[in-house]
Amino acid sequence: VNNNWKIRRKYLLILSIIASYILLLAASLVLFSNTALAAWISEAGSCHNQEYAPEMQMELEEAGYSTHMAKVESEGKEFTGVIVDVNGSLREVQNVGTALVQKGLTEEPSPIADEKDTDLLEILGKKRYLPRKPTETNPKIENVLLLYTEPLENQINPLTTRERAEMFKDLVASHWSLNIYMKLASEYEQGDIDDFDVLMYIGENYLSKIPKSLINDVNNTDREVLWINYYPWELDSRKLGFEVSGTHSFDFDRISYRGYDFKLNPTDTSLIEVIDPKKAKVLAWLVDNESGKSIPAIVNANDNFLYVSYLPLAIPYLDEPIPFFNALHETFGHHEKVSKALLRLEDIHPESDFDDLAMINGFLKEKKVLPHLAVIPVYVNPEKNINISILDRPQLINVLKDILSDNGTLILHGYTHQYDGVTGIDFEFWDVCLPA
Ligand SMILES: [Zn+2]
Ligand SMILES: [Zn+2]
Image (tube, rainbow, N blue to C red; front, side, top):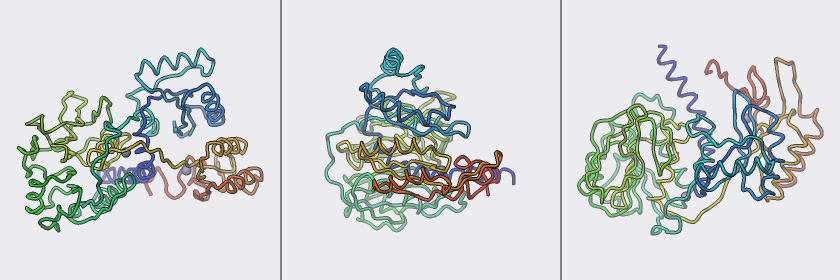
C-alpha cells in the first residue's frame, strides 16, 4: 500500500510537470535554434533580484551584451535572473564574466554548473544550439501518419497511449505545418504508408501486437519513418544497419547528445547495437552514470529511419526532451531559424511592485512584445495575518489598465493562489503535502 501511494503521489507531481512542459514545448523548441552559453549574473536566494533584474538587463544590453531573463525558484522563493548569452566555450563564458566584473556591471558572475539540478529554463538557456543542417530543408513533408498502441492495462501513467499520441501530435504540429492523422497501430492496413510522407510509430505498449503488414511496409519503404520505443526487433536490421535486442534496461540515467549531457529519469530502454556504422548513425547515447557504460539512444539509419530507443516525455525530467526535440528535425526537416515565444508574467498579485511592473511593461512595449499577465486578485499570508485585495491597490490597477490598453492580456490565475501557505508559493486547489 505504501509503495502504491508513493507511486501515485509521484505521478500526481509528474502530471503537473507535464502540464508545465506543454507550456514550455513551444518555447524550448525555439531556444534550440540559437547558439549560446549563459552565465548567471544574479545569485540565487535573494528576492530583491526581482526588482533589480530589468534595470540590470538594460544596463547589460546598453553595454552591448545579448541577454534574457529567466524565473527561478529556490527554496520556495521565486526570483528573476538575468542571463548573458555567450557564444562559445566555458572559458569564453568565464572571460565574459571577468570582463563584466572589470566594467563594474556585476560582482560575482558564476557560469552555470553543469551537474547542478536546477530550473528547466536555466538548463534550456545554456543548452541552445543550432540544428546541424540549418539552411538545408528536407523535401516538403505534408502528411504524417501517427500510429500508437493499445491502452496499457495497468495504467499508472497519467496519460493514456492515445493522449500521449495527441501530445506528440501537438508537439510536432506546433513546430512544422503538417497534416497529422492518428490511428491505432493494430488498425494499420497494408499500403497505408504510401499515402503519407512520414510514418511515425509510438511503441508505448509492450504487449500491443502490431500487424505484419506494418513491419513489411516499413521494411520495404523509402519514406521517412520515425519509430519510437518497442518492437523494432522485427524490422530488417541488415537494411537499417543496427539491431535492437528484446532485452531492456533501466540502468541509464543520462543522454549524451552533441557533446552535451542531459538527465534521463531512468526509464525502460531497448538495447541497440550498431552493425553497420555506414548505414546507422548514432545521434545520441544513453549513459549509465555508475558504470560509465553507453549505448546508442537515437539512431538515424539510411537518412530516413529515425529510431528512438526510449519513450521521450514519459516522465519528463528537466532537460530530458531536448535531444529528442532536436532529433525530430532529421525526420520533419531542418529549417531557417524561427524565433517565436510566448511571454507570461507570472503571479502578479496585490503585493507585486506596481513600479516594477510599469517599468517591465515600458521595456516590453519598446521591444514590441505583448505579454500575458497571470493575475491573482487576493494576496494572503496566513502566518503574518495578511489578506489584501487588488481593490486596495489602485496604483497596481492603473498599471494593469495601461497594460490592457497596450494590448497585453490579463489571465485570472486563481483567486488567492494558496491553500494554507503564501500566495504564489502555495497551490490553491490542492494540498501539496497531502496529494489531494
Ligand atoms: Zn526547429
Ligand atoms: Zn502561479
